[in-house]
Length: 247
Image (spheres, rainbow, N blue to C red):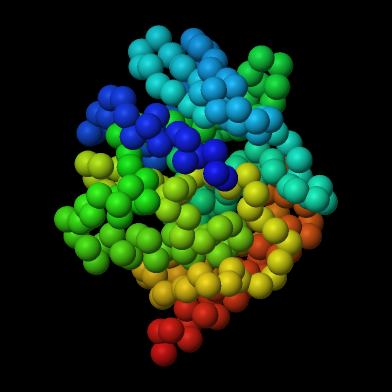
């Protein structure tokens, strides 16, 4: 996960997306990521074997960028790191309609299969927001977004409150979370030191309505049975926790 810190200058620079463009128009963005022409591939600029590639894309109408991960080292590897966990996090986010994970698709680039995720333009990390002491225009709404993110981080068992991988759109203050390549550990426990609040009514309602069979159908291409079972166990514990907070 540390390599995302090296992207700070890239993620927070460049031309902002048009105000009217919503990255969470999922179908449109997924289609773009799947069919856009690969204009340029930039790799090895971070170093290491697991560094993602920066991809320049163009569908003939719009130029965008993406991050491509091709490492596939799933569990039971001693040090799991897999682009498939990125896919699983996005599919789960769609099932729950949380809108926390930027669009990502599976694509082959230069003969390698991996995850291609929309590159977030005009964003700032939560770490830098704190460092620069930038106050959100609506402090309560922003904190609610962070609280809901904690619920999702517990659900996928990914590092909690990772300020380097939490991004905020500088215009809309929309909160996004990236880098799930080490998520979905087969633990039924919730994350330690990752406090859960009651969140929004929508979050709670969607968690309650999450169909285990739909989860298995959508996530089985990316997760094994043990990982899926642990995910569903954590979901039940989160629901129980939120119910206790609402009493």
